[in-house]
Image 1: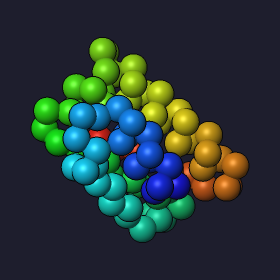
Image 2 (image 1 turned 120 degrees about the vertical axis):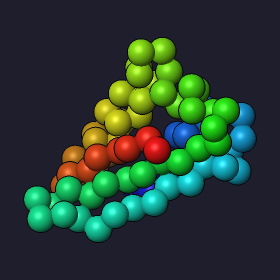
Image 3 (image 1 turned 180 degrees about the vertical axis):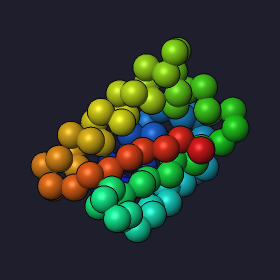
Length: 77
């Protein structure tokens, strides 16, 4: 899952070396939180107009997690 998020974000940004993903342990509800960090100048590219790209990233990640019977949340830091 972490590799999928890195691959998606790296394709969107100008500086793919700055893409970093940290993963929190599952909380009491079984939800795993993925924190996506990109360069300051690439934040707009990852978020998109009115958050459309960020929403699409979250949708793809949730669909992939659903196939693995996991619950995840993607936060863009």
